Amino acid sequence: MKKLKTIVVEDERLPRLSLLTKLENYHHTIEVVDACDSYDSARASILRHRPDLLFLDIQLQGRDSITLLEELKQTIALPYVIFTTAYSDRKYLMSAIKLSAVDYLLKPIDKGELTHAIAKAADRAAADASALPPQPEKMNFRSVNGKIFVAADDIAYIKADGNYA
Image 1: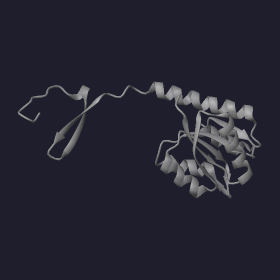
Image 2: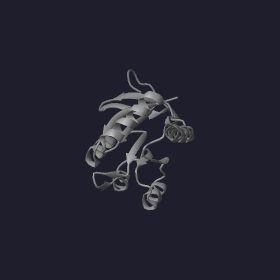
Image 3: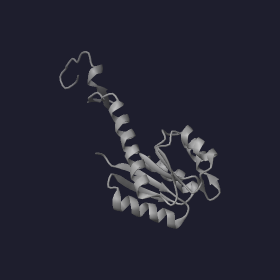
Image 4: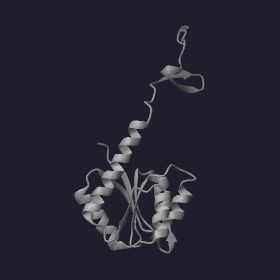
C-alpha cells in the first residue's frame, strides 16, 4: 500500500504535537511531509508538496481554513481533507461536507476515530487510483529540437531512413 503524503495544519502547538505523535506512533501508512502553524505557511506548503491527505484545523489564527481550501481549489485538485477542530458548529460541518471532507474530528482527537478517518482516506485513495484509466506506454524519439514523447497507441506507422525515423 502506498503511503499517503500528508500535511498537518494546526496553529496551536500542543494539539499539533499530539497529532504528529499519534500519526508517527500508530499510522505507518502516513508520511508527514510538513506541519504548518498558520494559514500562509499552510498555503505555501500545500502548493509546494501537493499532499494526498491534509489534517486541517478549522480556525487558523483567526482565519477560516474553509477559505483556504476554496482558494486552493482554484489552482490545484484538493487533497483528501480530515478536519480537526474544537468547533462542533453546524456551519463548519456543512462547509466540510460541501468540500467532500473525509472526516471531521473533534479535539482532543481520539486514537480510534483517527484510525477510522485515516482508513476512510486510504479507501478513497485506493478507489480513486483504481478508477483511473491505465496510462499508455510512451516512446521517446529524438528530433532536431530535442525529444518527442508519443504514446504507443498514437503511432500508426514509422518509416526508417538511415539514422532517422
